[in-house]
Image (cartoon, rainbow, N blue to C red; front, side, top):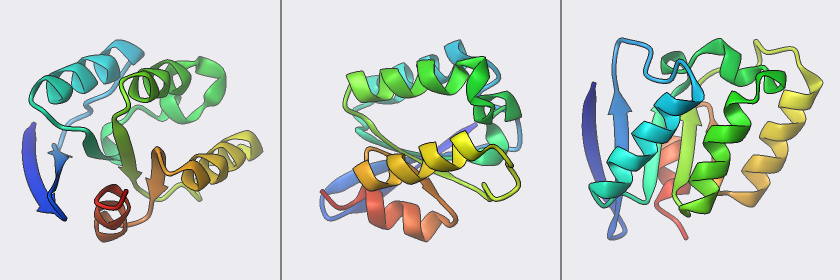
Length: 120
């Protein structure tokens, strides 16, 4: 796993880059948050391909646990990927509502994610 730092508008965004699965269970997401928060990041970008598909099945509770911690610590998150492949109406509604609030963001491109995370 590699962390690339993007500095935009005096905001540092941590981009998590990996070929491997980074979040397999809620503890992995919470550990990632803690490690990056400790390094001083308040904005994190991660890719959907690095997150277990179970995260996107809201019934598992993984997304709820992880995203609640991001909210509690006021760390903004962008998840970049193609979410159209998920058929759950509740997930699509969750993505829509999250994107409106701009704290947890589901984006289709890295550029879009960086733009959202670097604006306050």
